[in-house]
Image (cartoon, rainbow, N blue to C red):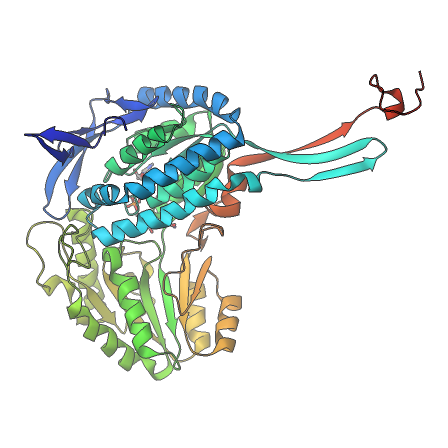
Length: 513
Ligand code: NAD
């Protein structure tokens, strides 16, 4: 094991190296930035700045791209056996060191350690899927389509591909992308969120320790300048983006304008439709964990419960009864079930939505602003708003915090129309005991991922992840089979070999010449 970029010795004790500069990772090593620009990184549980991340200039981006380009040529030629060998080794290292990585995630993101471990576990599924990529790259073969002519298809890597990722899953979302991209023979440049950039360096070190050649995995720290350089470069063939809808649509526009493949996953407003026959306790448990887990900072969080028929009052009571039991505190405290939000500004923005919901006439059943939460850090309690209507900003906007809205609907059809009328279409869930209703819902609903009595239906790694409408720009969902297609391009070969009778080798046929 080589030197760990995230740990250092202080007075004989190993501590996380979080109070210093957080550099790039180029050519298989840490590279200090030269732009003179840095971004502040905080421990959201204390509100203290813990690091300063380098923000790349266009020149630094160009150096990272050049390194990746050189590495891509060699990596493309590596055998499938070598690639899968590296992936298996990476899988083992990630598994062995997941506790340490969870601590790195929690230190900058704030989520509780069990949540951080959960995102690593989901990311591990993507590594395991990528270990089997040779199966997906087999192509097809048609013999003797005409006399002496065979046709076959192969899939080849694109070259250098980039991933631009959000703060809320600093390990899992990069693993959605880089595992498949690298397994397919590409070099991958990660531009992580500048809010929690250290996880990317931990992953980079693991890739190196797993035997990945230098330059195949690069971390370019930065903000819009780094992203713009990646989008403008003719040497970057494809861009995978996950983040807010406004940025996703802009990345899609700018990336495709320069001829790149782009998959850009945006924001969400996920609805949970609860039918009158649903198990209220199960629905309430699901709503609480799916709305407030990771402080609501999940793209698959439930942010609207649609209560159908007479189920509303009982459901709101059941949710409200569970909320005081949710323990809020530092993510490092094993007793905490919900940590702080990512920044002070974001916490204040979420709190302002609670005020605006109340002003617009929503009933504030539980007010997170009044909660007894740790004084330091970016904490906010959990909020439940009832009698929300579709015209309120708490309904139309993605709040991305621990605020759950309840909308009342008289019928299934009314609830369905509400979901289908929403601008976003990432995930949705139905709670019912009726199989016919469930089947009808999965047919009718306009969203990319559907849960039946499952609140957060994130697909397993051998399916693909992606929403509809304003939750996805582009046509390729992420990871799984669609990820393999995205990171490779097809080639079809039509091949004619001379008739055996004319072959220069004696194949046992009568010779014509
Ligand atoms: P964000 O859009 O602010 O940032 C995402 C990435 O884009 C970051 O790497 C950031 O540095 C970069 N970026 C920010 N502004 C940019 C600009 N003007 N030009 C170029 N690049 C820019 O998102 P975030 O706050 O980090 O993450 C939260 C958002 O991500 C939420 O909207 C959430 O729904 C969404 N998200 C979606 C999914 C999904 O699968 N659909 C998954 C996770 C998060």
